[in-house]
Image 1 (cartoon, rainbow, N blue to C red):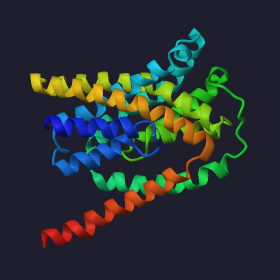
Image 2 (cartoon, rainbow, N blue to C red):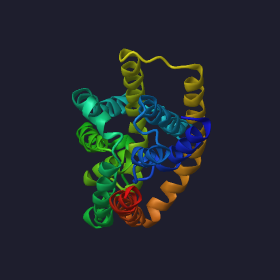
Image 3 (cartoon, one colour):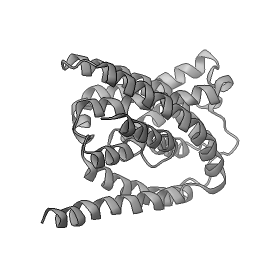
Image 4 (cartoon, one colour):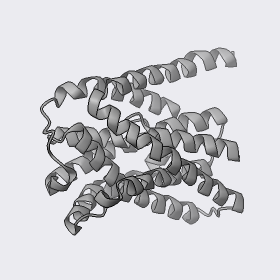
Length: 265
Protein backbone atom coordinates (compact mmCIF):
# COMPACT_ATOMS: atom_id res chain seq x y z
CA UNK A 1 0.00 0.00 0.00
CA UNK A 2 1.31 3.43 -0.91
CA UNK A 3 0.33 6.83 0.50
CA UNK A 4 -2.07 7.72 -2.32
CA UNK A 5 -3.93 4.42 -1.89
CA UNK A 6 -4.11 5.02 1.87
CA UNK A 7 -5.58 8.50 1.39
CA UNK A 8 -8.16 7.27 -1.14
CA UNK A 9 -9.23 4.43 1.18
CA UNK A 10 -9.48 6.89 4.09
CA UNK A 11 -11.65 9.26 2.06
CA UNK A 12 -13.92 6.36 1.14
CA UNK A 13 -14.08 5.36 4.82
CA UNK A 14 -14.91 8.88 5.98
CA UNK A 15 -17.71 9.29 3.46
CA UNK A 16 -19.27 5.85 3.84
CA UNK A 17 -18.84 5.01 7.55
CA UNK A 18 -22.10 6.65 8.61
CA UNK A 19 -24.06 5.95 5.44
CA UNK A 20 -25.99 2.65 5.23
CA UNK A 21 -23.92 1.51 2.25
CA UNK A 22 -21.04 -0.32 4.03
CA UNK A 23 -17.72 1.42 4.48
CA UNK A 24 -15.87 -1.91 4.77
CA UNK A 25 -17.49 -3.16 1.58
CA UNK A 26 -16.42 -0.08 -0.34
CA UNK A 27 -12.87 -0.31 0.98
CA UNK A 28 -12.71 -3.98 -0.04
CA UNK A 29 -13.78 -3.07 -3.56
CA UNK A 30 -11.27 -0.21 -3.73
CA UNK A 31 -8.41 -2.29 -2.31
CA UNK A 32 -9.28 -5.11 -4.74
CA UNK A 33 -9.06 -2.58 -7.58
CA UNK A 34 -5.63 -1.54 -6.28
CA UNK A 35 -4.59 -5.20 -6.04
CA UNK A 36 -3.85 -5.02 -2.31
CA UNK A 37 -6.99 -6.61 -0.79
CA UNK A 38 -5.20 -9.83 0.16
CA UNK A 39 -2.33 -8.09 1.95
CA UNK A 40 -2.53 -8.63 5.70
CA UNK A 41 -1.68 -5.00 6.41
CA UNK A 42 -4.60 -3.89 4.22
CA UNK A 43 -7.01 -5.86 6.41
CA UNK A 44 -5.51 -4.17 9.46
CA UNK A 45 -5.66 -0.75 7.80
CA UNK A 46 -9.33 -1.00 6.79
CA UNK A 47 -10.31 -1.78 10.38
CA UNK A 48 -8.03 0.64 12.23
CA UNK A 49 -8.86 3.75 10.18
CA UNK A 50 -12.54 3.27 10.99
CA UNK A 51 -11.64 4.34 14.52
CA UNK A 52 -10.52 7.74 13.23
CA UNK A 53 -13.83 8.25 11.46
CA UNK A 54 -15.77 7.06 14.50
CA UNK A 55 -13.98 9.49 16.83
CA UNK A 56 -15.54 12.34 14.85
CA UNK A 57 -18.75 11.37 16.68
CA UNK A 58 -17.13 12.19 20.02
CA UNK A 59 -16.19 15.65 18.73
CA UNK A 60 -19.49 16.48 17.03
CA UNK A 61 -21.65 15.10 19.85
CA UNK A 62 -19.26 16.03 22.66
CA UNK A 63 -21.87 17.21 25.17
CA UNK A 64 -24.33 14.41 24.41
CA UNK A 65 -21.72 11.64 24.31
CA UNK A 66 -20.51 12.38 27.83
CA UNK A 67 -23.70 11.56 29.67
CA UNK A 68 -24.70 9.57 32.74
CA UNK A 69 -23.06 6.31 33.76
CA UNK A 70 -26.34 4.60 32.89
CA UNK A 71 -25.95 5.63 29.25
CA UNK A 72 -22.49 4.03 29.06
CA UNK A 73 -23.82 0.80 30.55
CA UNK A 74 -26.43 0.75 27.78
CA UNK A 75 -23.67 1.16 25.19
CA UNK A 76 -21.78 -1.67 26.87
CA UNK A 77 -24.85 -3.92 26.73
CA UNK A 78 -25.27 -3.11 23.02
CA UNK A 79 -21.56 -3.78 22.46
CA UNK A 80 -21.54 -7.25 24.08
CA UNK A 81 -23.01 -9.18 21.07
CA UNK A 82 -20.25 -7.81 18.80
CA UNK A 83 -17.60 -9.01 21.26
CA UNK A 84 -19.06 -12.51 21.38
CA UNK A 85 -19.55 -12.87 17.63
CA UNK A 86 -16.16 -11.30 16.91
CA UNK A 87 -14.34 -13.79 19.13
CA UNK A 88 -16.27 -16.75 17.74
CA UNK A 89 -16.07 -15.91 14.04
CA UNK A 90 -13.06 -13.60 13.72
CA UNK A 91 -11.08 -15.83 11.35
CA UNK A 92 -14.05 -16.47 9.08
CA UNK A 93 -14.75 -12.75 8.95
CA UNK A 94 -11.13 -12.10 7.94
CA UNK A 95 -11.50 -14.55 5.06
CA UNK A 96 -14.49 -12.59 3.77
CA UNK A 97 -12.57 -9.31 3.84
CA UNK A 98 -10.94 -10.04 0.48
CA UNK A 99 -14.03 -11.24 -1.37
CA UNK A 100 -15.79 -8.60 -3.52
CA UNK A 101 -18.53 -11.06 -4.48
CA UNK A 102 -19.68 -11.29 -0.86
CA UNK A 103 -19.76 -7.50 -0.79
CA UNK A 104 -21.76 -7.29 -4.02
CA UNK A 105 -24.41 -9.75 -2.88
CA UNK A 106 -24.71 -8.03 0.49
CA UNK A 107 -25.07 -4.65 -1.21
CA UNK A 108 -27.95 -5.86 -3.37
CA UNK A 109 -29.82 -7.63 -0.55
CA UNK A 110 -29.30 -4.68 1.78
CA UNK A 111 -30.47 -2.31 -0.94
CA UNK A 112 -33.75 -4.15 -1.33
CA UNK A 113 -34.27 -3.98 2.43
CA UNK A 114 -33.57 -0.23 2.52
CA UNK A 115 -36.21 0.36 -0.15
CA UNK A 116 -38.81 -1.15 2.20
CA UNK A 117 -37.56 -0.15 5.66
CA UNK A 118 -39.33 3.23 5.83
CA UNK A 119 -42.66 1.51 5.15
CA UNK A 120 -41.98 -1.28 7.63
CA UNK A 121 -41.26 1.10 10.50
CA UNK A 122 -43.44 4.07 9.59
CA UNK A 123 -44.90 4.19 13.13
CA UNK A 124 -41.62 4.90 14.92
CA UNK A 125 -41.85 7.27 17.87
CA UNK A 126 -40.37 10.52 16.59
CA UNK A 127 -40.06 12.01 20.10
CA UNK A 128 -37.85 9.31 21.64
CA UNK A 129 -34.21 10.18 22.46
CA UNK A 130 -31.03 8.12 22.90
CA UNK A 131 -31.06 8.88 26.64
CA UNK A 132 -34.40 7.05 27.06
CA UNK A 133 -33.40 3.85 25.27
CA UNK A 134 -33.88 0.82 27.50
CA UNK A 135 -31.32 -1.91 28.17
CA UNK A 136 -33.40 -4.41 26.24
CA UNK A 137 -33.56 -2.12 23.22
CA UNK A 138 -29.82 -1.49 23.42
CA UNK A 139 -29.07 -5.22 23.43
CA UNK A 140 -31.36 -5.86 20.44
CA UNK A 141 -29.67 -3.06 18.48
CA UNK A 142 -26.34 -4.71 19.32
CA UNK A 143 -27.59 -7.98 17.83
CA UNK A 144 -28.55 -6.20 14.61
CA UNK A 145 -25.10 -4.59 14.50
CA UNK A 146 -23.50 -8.06 14.37
CA UNK A 147 -24.97 -8.54 10.89
CA UNK A 148 -22.39 -6.01 9.70
CA UNK A 149 -19.62 -8.56 10.28
CA UNK A 150 -20.62 -9.78 6.83
CA UNK A 151 -18.78 -7.39 4.46
CA UNK A 152 -21.20 -5.21 2.55
CA UNK A 153 -23.99 -5.26 5.12
CA UNK A 154 -23.17 -1.86 6.75
CA UNK A 155 -22.73 -1.47 10.48
CA UNK A 156 -24.62 1.82 10.59
CA UNK A 157 -27.41 0.51 8.37
CA UNK A 158 -27.91 -2.66 10.42
CA UNK A 159 -27.90 -0.87 13.78
CA UNK A 160 -30.16 1.95 12.54
CA UNK A 161 -32.70 -0.59 11.25
CA UNK A 162 -32.35 -2.41 14.56
CA UNK A 163 -33.22 0.80 16.37
CA UNK A 164 -36.19 1.50 14.13
CA UNK A 165 -37.47 -2.02 14.73
CA UNK A 166 -37.60 -1.03 18.41
CA UNK A 167 -39.80 2.02 17.68
CA UNK A 168 -37.00 4.59 17.53
CA UNK A 169 -37.19 7.40 15.00
CA UNK A 170 -34.71 7.40 12.12
CA UNK A 171 -32.74 10.24 13.70
CA UNK A 172 -32.62 8.69 17.18
CA UNK A 173 -31.67 5.28 15.78
CA UNK A 174 -28.91 6.88 13.71
CA UNK A 175 -27.51 8.82 16.66
CA UNK A 176 -27.44 5.75 18.90
CA UNK A 177 -25.74 3.87 16.06
CA UNK A 178 -23.06 6.57 15.98
CA UNK A 179 -22.52 6.37 19.75
CA UNK A 180 -22.39 2.56 19.67
CA UNK A 181 -19.75 2.72 16.95
CA UNK A 182 -17.21 4.21 19.38
CA UNK A 183 -16.75 1.18 21.69
CA UNK A 184 -17.34 -1.21 18.78
CA UNK A 185 -14.58 0.16 16.59
CA UNK A 186 -12.26 0.76 19.53
CA UNK A 187 -12.63 -2.91 20.45
CA UNK A 188 -12.20 -4.02 16.83
CA UNK A 189 -9.05 -1.92 16.49
CA UNK A 190 -7.48 -3.31 19.66
CA UNK A 191 -8.28 -6.90 18.67
CA UNK A 192 -7.02 -6.43 15.11
CA UNK A 193 -3.73 -4.94 16.29
CA UNK A 194 -3.31 -7.76 18.82
CA UNK A 195 -3.96 -10.40 16.14
CA UNK A 196 -1.50 -8.66 13.81
CA UNK A 197 1.32 -8.89 16.34
CA UNK A 198 0.28 -12.36 17.53
CA UNK A 199 0.61 -13.63 13.95
CA UNK A 200 4.21 -12.44 13.88
CA UNK A 201 3.85 -9.16 12.00
CA UNK A 202 5.51 -5.92 13.08
CA UNK A 203 4.49 -2.49 11.80
CA UNK A 204 7.18 -0.64 9.89
CA UNK A 205 7.63 3.13 10.17
CA UNK A 206 5.91 3.56 6.79
CA UNK A 207 2.96 1.44 7.88
CA UNK A 208 2.59 3.43 11.09
CA UNK A 209 2.58 6.62 9.03
CA UNK A 210 -0.06 5.14 6.71
CA UNK A 211 -2.28 4.35 9.70
CA UNK A 212 -1.85 7.87 11.09
CA UNK A 213 -2.66 9.48 7.75
CA UNK A 214 -5.63 7.16 7.24
CA UNK A 215 -7.10 7.99 10.64
CA UNK A 216 -6.62 11.75 10.23
CA UNK A 217 -8.15 11.84 6.74
CA UNK A 218 -11.01 9.55 7.79
CA UNK A 219 -11.69 11.75 10.82
CA UNK A 220 -11.86 14.98 8.80
CA UNK A 221 -14.03 13.56 6.01
CA UNK A 222 -16.38 11.85 8.48
CA UNK A 223 -16.91 15.16 10.31
CA UNK A 224 -18.36 16.56 7.10
CA UNK A 225 -20.37 13.44 6.28
CA UNK A 226 -22.21 12.99 9.58
CA UNK A 227 -24.09 16.28 9.55
CA UNK A 228 -25.15 15.85 5.93
CA UNK A 229 -26.37 12.30 6.54
CA UNK A 230 -28.47 13.11 9.62
CA UNK A 231 -30.11 16.05 7.84
CA UNK A 232 -30.90 14.02 4.73
CA UNK A 233 -32.07 10.94 6.64
CA UNK A 234 -34.53 12.84 8.83
CA UNK A 235 -36.17 14.40 5.75
CA UNK A 236 -35.95 11.78 3.01
CA UNK A 237 -35.33 8.33 4.50
CA UNK A 238 -33.35 5.40 3.10
CA UNK A 239 -34.56 4.86 -0.46
CA UNK A 240 -31.75 6.66 -2.27
CA UNK A 241 -29.24 4.51 -0.38
CA UNK A 242 -31.21 1.40 -1.31
CA UNK A 243 -31.07 2.25 -5.01
CA UNK A 244 -27.37 3.05 -4.75
CA UNK A 245 -26.60 -0.28 -3.07
CA UNK A 246 -28.50 -2.26 -5.70
CA UNK A 247 -26.82 -0.46 -8.62
CA UNK A 248 -23.37 -0.73 -7.03
CA UNK A 249 -23.81 -4.40 -6.18
CA UNK A 250 -25.04 -5.34 -9.66
CA UNK A 251 -22.22 -3.33 -11.26
CA UNK A 252 -19.64 -5.25 -9.22
CA UNK A 253 -21.17 -8.59 -10.22
CA UNK A 254 -21.28 -7.62 -13.91
CA UNK A 255 -17.69 -6.44 -13.86
CA UNK A 256 -16.51 -9.56 -12.06
CA UNK A 257 -18.37 -12.19 -14.09
CA UNK A 258 -18.47 -10.56 -17.53
CA UNK A 259 -15.95 -7.75 -18.01
CA UNK A 260 -13.08 -9.42 -16.13
CA UNK A 261 -13.89 -12.77 -17.76
CA UNK A 262 -13.72 -11.20 -21.20
CA UNK A 263 -10.45 -9.52 -20.28
CA UNK A 264 -8.93 -12.84 -19.25
CA UNK A 265 -10.11 -14.46 -22.48
